[in-house]
Amino acid sequence: MLYPTSVLLRIASESRVSQGRSLVRERRRAARLLALLAALFAACWLPYHVLTVVMDFLPTSPPLMTLLRYSLLLGHANSAVNPLVYCFMTRAFRHSARQLLRMPRRPGAAGGLAARALQRRKVRRRAPPSPPSPLPPLPPAHAPSSASWPPPRAPSCS
Figure 1 (cartoon, helix red, strand yellow):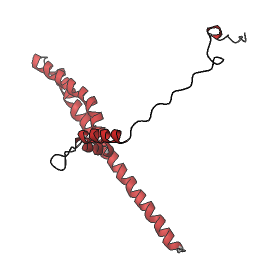
Figure 2 (tube, helix red, strand yellow):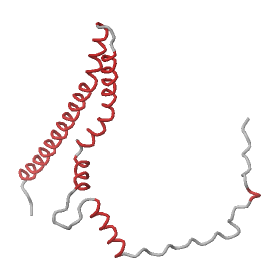
Figure 3 (tube, helix red, strand yellow):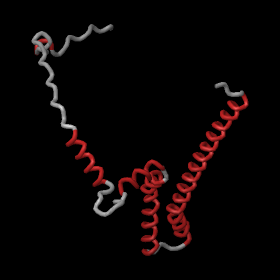
């Protein structure tokens, strides 16, 4: 069946529009991720920098030094939080985590890791492993001898 050119062009433009929408969606997701990372960075490091400015104008006291230590720890904790944010903002990771932690749907049914382990055991029982095929031994002519090791050096060009 032959399609008129206008129908084919409309189908092609609709696919381009849907690709454009998905591209916009991906860019928005990336922008949200970057905005979240920037906000977390500011929230983690701002207390430390505020305290260092305050310490320039106030005399140093033990409580202030303790606060400075904890604020520095909070700033360094930002480095540990970033990979977690990347993971939880990724669809594939969230899907895998949900499957891993999934609760059973009916009473007595195994869910999550237990279900996968049980499934693997069932699969292993159904298909017995085939015996390994032994490799044939090397013939004596190809066996390495101690006389040929180390190999002779190539002559140098100098």
